[in-house]
Length: 309
Image (tube, rainbow, N blue to C red):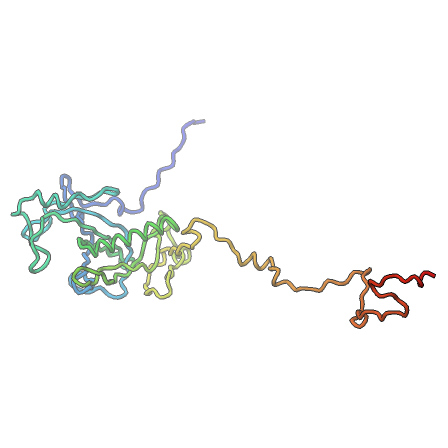
């Protein structure tokens, strides 16, 4: 009898999608490895969201899958950035103003608009990465404006709170809109990401064929009744909004249930107390004083000697 143990072969991937790369050894800047991933989005001066100068459709509702922070150095020719510094998570931005002050004035570039003074070559950049689920097209929205920074900061704050209160794997599906922002020049429109629902991109069961994805995973539904409707693949799981109890991490007392079980004294019927059995009741007409009898002495009258006998 042999003591050899037959080992089962380890499962192999059904395809070569995972691990695929077209990079070349020694290439420090591979294609597709820059800041922009997929198509570039822009919020123009007219308050419109565009891609390649074409306004995005009204039903465009991508999922925000990631964000990035960078510091880039630009040249005077307006081409690709000369240098890009990636800011890691939990790392603060460097002092960009000091970096620009240390650069020679010959390196400064033109301002963002006509008549704007020159600015330093270093610029802080925020970038949101989005995925359109129906088409699986990727988009990047880089922004270095104050309004763009406010938009991304508000979006990240909501995502972090939702993951803390409801689901740590949730992603925000948004509609790209605009809101008014006050400025020292009277105000203007700034970009805004309106969250219309929360989804979880779990990918289903890996390695197992799904005969009917719609039957195994719930069809996502809008969180808000007035939110714009959009078609989503059936394998996207919707995550419901957190309840007040989940947000406060505390139970709320149900005073209505206790009030229904215990009636207040004012609401209880009042019943008259019956008279005791040994108490003699007297009619109203019997409450009159009795008439004095003949020969009866009045109260306080002195005794007469003739009455003694």
